[in-house]
Image (cartoon, rainbow, N blue to C red; front, side, top):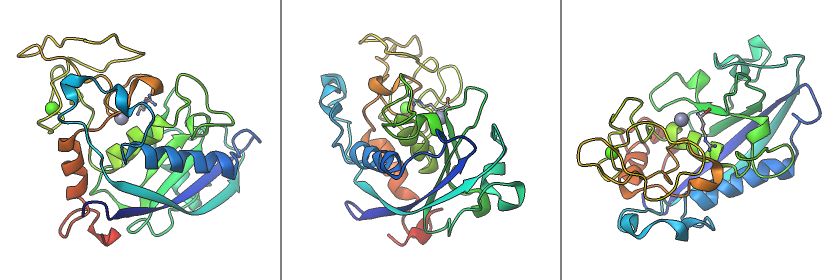
Length: 243
Ligand code: ARG
Ligand code: ZN
Ligand code: CA
């Protein structure tokens, strides 16, 4: 599958205010960020510490904007219960979710930047939700989450990646080349940041699957790449993408 995975992306915009009705140009910036981050073409890729140079990865998955669907709404926030994904609840049903990645841009609320559905879930709710304030690079994107990395992180989940700390103290992300982290890291951690878990490894705080600021995350690993590629092969949960 190397170098051949190309994902059509449908963007569903739900807006009440004009700020929430993000522009086509802003939507394209999110696609561009995904293409950079998943192809080791991000400008900060060279900042990966030497310690991790042997495991940093060009994931070789690209994204193509397929269509933008817009709908006006009176809702002020949508929460995380998938109502934005249902036309019957005032949202927008996904478009052919078994062969296209659906993104929803809307106000989530509760300080949530975005959330994703892992492979294997119901196709009616499959895809990634990104709060419109954190969608792409321009317009209403707000620092320190203004570099489109919420999209990169959430698409990582959609491709089966877990949080690097395994959502538990010294937990596992089921990837062997990422170090064990105590817990989530925030902000812009100083390097090196040592884990107190077994072996006291240096934590890979610059991995997209941590919780740091957008300007502090800039790599996936080879192990994460294999885990993502596995869902697209025959028998994988997203094999219908036909790659
Ligand atoms: N699921 C996380 C949240 O909603 C997203 C974290 C994204 N991190 C980032 N630097 N953009 O809080
Ligand atoms: Zn996450
Ligand atoms: Ca690991």
